[in-house]
Image (cartoon, rainbow, N blue to C red; front, side, top):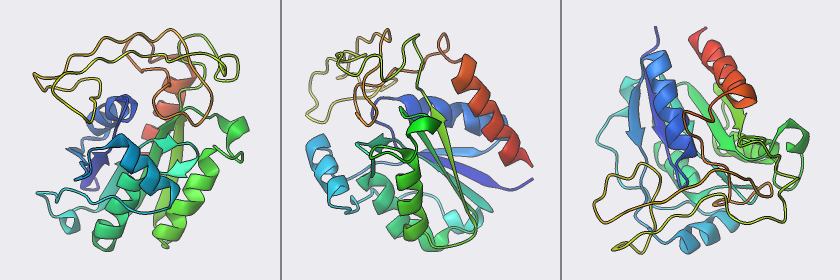
Length: 220
């Protein structure tokens, strides 16, 4: 079996949710990617201008792994700055690279402005090697509504934090962070904060089926 590590960046918590499940399924190590820049607005701007965010150095040596699996979201159709910064810094240390995005767009949206195929192409340019494989796990339809049906709706999650200017993510262990979340709706494709939040109760149907497909592919 390949020695594998799963690394992830998350904002809403969806990529963290899937990363933890994936690492358990394939018996891989797990590591969170953090940026030196904590301002979400700054990270969005960096993403828009195709710049990489500065990454807090990892305490691990990626050259000791046969395979590196990277998870992260899509923000408004862009390869996000934390992932771009990570690949720019550590890409040379990766032997076999897998990129997975847990995103709001489905297969029918993949070639649109906010679709995941554009982001996959950006990642392939950033890591120009035949040893890269890309997968999407779509949350479209999670919570009983499609993204298009709720395109004019509000946020599917409410998160209230104190003592932190950078916000928080679901599952944050910081004592200064308290979140109250709901997961009853979805919004338009490409929105970084208004996506359905994955929970054990909602992790079924198409999103679970796609997760299982990706796991099987990675086990081969």
